[in-house]
Image (cartoon, rainbow, N blue to C red; front, side, top):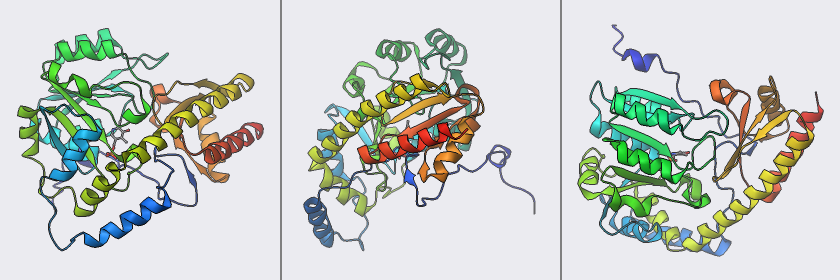
Amino acid sequence: MKNWIRPEIAALSAYHIPAPGEWIKLDAMENPYRWPAELEREWLESLQNVEINRYPDPAAIELTNRLRSTMNIPADAGVVLGNGSDELIQMILMAIAESGRTVMAPEPSFVMYKMIATYVGMKFSAVPLKESDFELDLDKILTTIVEQQPAIIFLAYPNNPTGNLWKRADIEQILEVAEGFVVVDEAYHVFANDSFMGDIYKYENLLVMRTLSKMGLAGLRLGLLAGGRKWITEIDKVRLPYNINTLTQHTASFILNHAAVLEKQAAELRSNREDLLAQLQQLADSSPLIQQVYPSQANFILFRVDSGWADKIFEGLKLRGVLIKNLNPASGALSESLRVTVSTKEENAQFLIALKRCLEDE
Ligand SMILES: *Cc1c(COP(=O)(O)O)cnc(C)c1O
């Protein structure tokens, strides 16, 4: 049979995600906390009333209203929900894809922007971040915008995998110069001290994307996109009916009704992040093998190790039962870099002990 698979798809390697094993899992920015036992019991009881023989509410009205209030979405903004924000990226690009059109993003950033651009047959234009501190190279971005006229620009705020929050003024300039959409991806907003949600009315081209994944509900798969009603109405047309299943709608509404629980967990993780940052920095001060620990406004920390050491440390940690993310295979600006998710005090301590052992074990 003829090979009907598009060449750009055949050229991709499948997105690899390690199967969960017996690890202390610090590779995927998951929230390590469960809910208080009483709340969990209340949730399980409430599930008895869920009618899974029926199709879900196609517009997820109750859930959308809860999200509007807990996420402070401006009243006049449109909102569309996705099966994780990954699906929202896919929906946006399906709505605007035309051959010859360009998706732009800084690099390194979230890999799905480029992958989904490829799936839908769009060009992808990467503008490197500044090497020293992973800030936006604003001059380069602005000239690239003028030259290439991207249909859309993705800005992760804070950025994954670098963890930093770019300068608000830089993003405002991009919003002003770009004639295409600018998606501010706020997957980590609960760990950061700024947001563009309140700016939707100021910029016609601004779309703000959020997810519940990093807030503690990764298993539910729920993301949201907010922006001008005119655009959200168009993007909503490519959404598959019933993309937010009944159990997700019910469970997300339930926990958002107790949003203080999630807020407390996020506050705990922010505090644990400051501790872990300080401890990693201390380790870097005493060991030449850890070369740089980057600041973070997210629930993970990026650090760079000495030449030849990222793979060794990654494998050494695995042998000691700790799984983090090795970014060395991505090479370029991420050579010899590792990313660790901030977890409970206990798991962070276990990670640090294992890391120290790896460093002693030369
Ligand atoms: C994790 C992540 C997402 C994906 O979130 P889901 O809602 O789980 O699909 C989107 N953007 C960034 C920057 C992320 O790090």
